Length: 258
Ligand code: NAD
Image 1 (cartoon, rainbow, N blue to C red):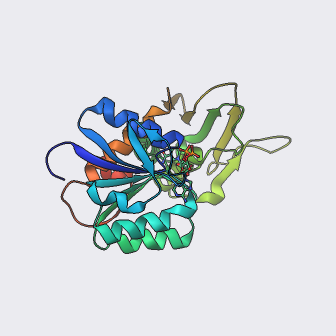
Image 2 (spheres, helix red, strand yellow; image 1 turned 90 degrees about the vertical axis):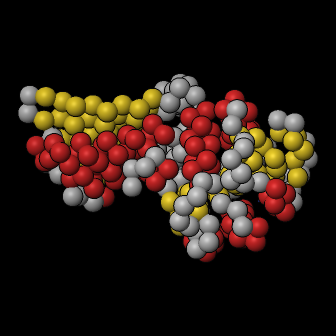
């Protein structure tokens, strides 16, 4: 990076996240959009003409991708060709896309993050630590709340949260219990309960309840608006464009959590 404003090439620029990141970059003041790339190749994002040409990344310090799982391999290859670090927020990647990111990570810094929220990244960290410190006397239950239009349950974030708790408790996914209904019997010590609530227009809430004898600790994350992903992606972009060892990293590394 040049020391001046961070020059960003946004891939998937015309999408919801692409536009949110472009706006967040302008609000932040220390970054600017220099290329808006989208398969449509028409229109503009924050005054930058949209192009379908991946060669437009040449003038950027960093590339951010929030597009489609099938497009990520091509972005990774273009970053390799032009020598650019890359932040990928696109979810559901297939093995060939991951392999292309790993190939790029041999020469560039790459961040791959299915959830770029800074608060959620810290929540996972605290959940792992709290579960480890409180031990098996404390029952772990996770409750997520999302708007009624959400198609999958539980949320991917709730599952990652359960994995963090399982890590802290030295358990694995076989301990996950989804919802409870009927004569399920007494709660087993090693269960990690996961519950999905669907409610009108809630953007996303995740609660980890750790209940022990005579006391209960709760960790809660509430999303106020979708800008949280955009701000986190910008933070990842600043980090990935700064000097450091090439490799594939996640949001934990961006926040210095190891
Ligand atoms: P969207 O559909 O609004 O936008 C995607 C954009 O990518 C569209 O403009 C589309 O034209 C473009 N696109 C699709 N295929 C392309 C291709 N082959 N080449 C170039 N551009 C292409 O979707 P969205 O809500 O912005 O989400 C985009 C991705 O980001 C999804 O995978 C979503 O799951 C993920 N996402 C991640 C986070 C996170 O925190 N990491 C948060 C929200 C969404």
